[in-house]
Image 1 (cartoon, rainbow, N blue to C red):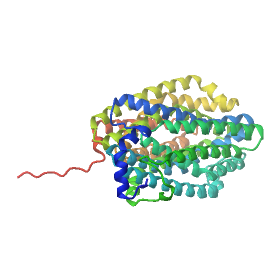
Image 2 (cartoon, rainbow, N blue to C red):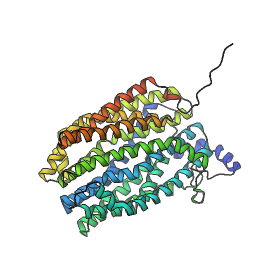
Image 3 (cartoon, rainbow, N blue to C red):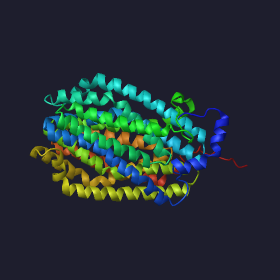
Image 4 (cartoon, one colour):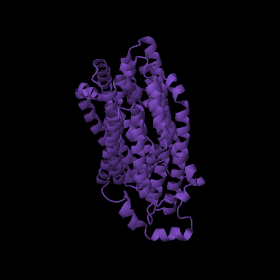
Length: 476
């Protein structure tokens, strides 16, 4: 997020055309009906997330149907580890979205431009670090996770091919975050539809047609993610807009990097500790052998679709609140927060009920092995009716991030979704050793975090998160 237009004269020139370009290619969320704007923003994000999940689901369905349970377990065994390694950088990049939306709402064109270029530099460096780390330490990490020896070779293949192209994944998320922060959630949807279709076709060609191994599913995902990344960069590099990206100007701007890290580092840490907790859960699941691992992976893919409304309203809330607090429109931010939270909770619970009822059929789409279905249904029916709690926690966390209070969700997630969840699993596995108690770790920690978030949302002054505390005036 650095400035393309470093010359002050260029910045003044851009200022004359700020509003016309904003209407054409971005979405000003500080004017108009807040409820309508949130829904209009959330809908493209919703469909984007649907196609995003198709990436993961296509890999699992095609691998499970063509290559069997062992191959599906190989793909599933690495899912939590991939999330752990990617989530820190993606979470930190959320800080860039907060900075961009705040600058945009305040009419700071130069700040928007410098923030965008800093964000892209961060994405490039992050992608290179992830590639080197993932490719090098794959075998060690998977062995540490107690991956079933029967599926370990294929798991290593899948993991390594995925990380050869992880820079495209990181940069795509960076680019969509930039566009979302500017209120443009439509273009990421278009690009994602194209890349999702590409991914499905390549999966069918590589796995079903050429009968290549499980590594080819990761290769297909890498190609399709690279396509969407290129499309995003082409759009962002168009000239004459407030955010026009100049590739030679992609570098770190110290002031913007500090702001991005201030708001994003807590989110990155939050994502990492959740990822670490999930890796520990995955390790416990792996100890029950490949049928449990395949079922856990299948459930995770289905659950990814169930989370879509939560993600959609969360992203809309963060952008809406960031822009409106930048414009000092506090009442609009409060109304939007209440509306977004309630909407996400209601929709998530409806989906949870549907999943509870249809779980056997949905799990069977990935693998029709009776043992896999039994494990998957058991987990689905423990967790699905509590999706309302998950939605509430994520929505309030999104409000906090949009208000510049990223430290709050980081603290709650670290203490509840990581420390408490791990402690719970360690205790119940020592006492009972039944896999169902691992499944219960999720709804229990969702409930506890929701209570804490509710207290914070009702009684804290989150609305003034970007403002310095006023000095007390001493009276004579």
